Image (cartoon, rainbow, N blue to C red; front, side):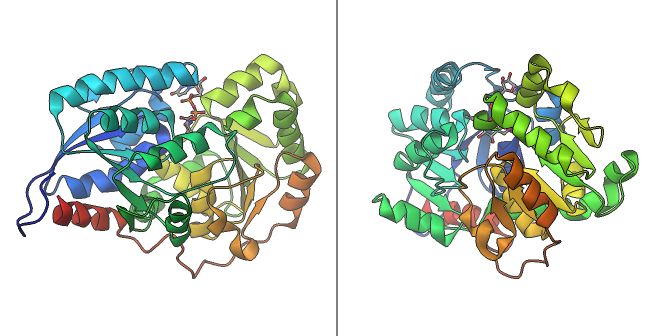
Length: 365
Ligand code: UD1
């Protein structure tokens, strides 16, 4: 790396993405990085369906990836191992100054590990998050990635503290959250371009949004059926964009036959449509990490169907409630929710995290 001398040089960066939330996070950062530096984009192919991948590149104007590893579905070891091996070849070929990874997926740890073993510096965007639940594959991925990263872009003060407790002090920079940038970019576009409410004949505030895709909920049929029963019993209109993992389980298990007719299952939505749908919902029921945060930022009540969260900041003030997969608790939380007031605190930082990260790279490298 080229430190110092007051002259900032062009940095060659390999950015690694592979799953839906990473496309959303990379969009604003990539725009900033490319103003000055050379970015090579690697898509691991962990998510590959049009509605899980390409639609985000088109809508968010993310550059076409320079490499697509097309790793596809498989076990954790298969996905992680395949990405690790293929990324090594790319890094040997490209010899970048820096590798950037996002979040907590198998693509994150595999990309970071390939770089670290070649002594290429790793920057982790969304460093320091902890759910303290090591049974989640994502928690394992984020802990390991943080420990092999040279630059740790932490979205919140709590993330900085989590890292400090694990002895990670050097290279930690609190930048705010790049998803605030993504949401800030998408909201005005959603207002003008999204017609999802009209298309689905929904009224503002007249429905809830449900998403379920965590392994712990989809791979345990008793949990999945409890979630499905709870939302059905609420009697509310539920819009349910279904993740492919969940769709497969629902179809194979016969749980679909028990679905209330007020639960409307739809294909996964594009980001702009999802932002529009969430903004006008009277509540969000989810096991997604990103959606808990988006609900908080949009001022919509969130009911999190997990026992832990890596975003405890969202729990402050009761706008997000952790209810696990217990049918009674989910139902109670749905019925008790109130439309939250717009949030005035900024635990995730004001917009501009992408600019701050780009500026740090300008100055440090
Ligand atoms: C992954 C991430 C998770 C992230 C989520 C966002 C890991 C361990 N988990 O979980 O952190 O929040 O993405 O969605 O990396 N599938 C398709 N089409 C696709 C993508 C997936 O059919 O385009 C199916 C696969 O066949 C597989 C299942 O969905 O059976 C799960 O995909 P996978 O990428 O392993 O994990 P996610 O649950 O999506």
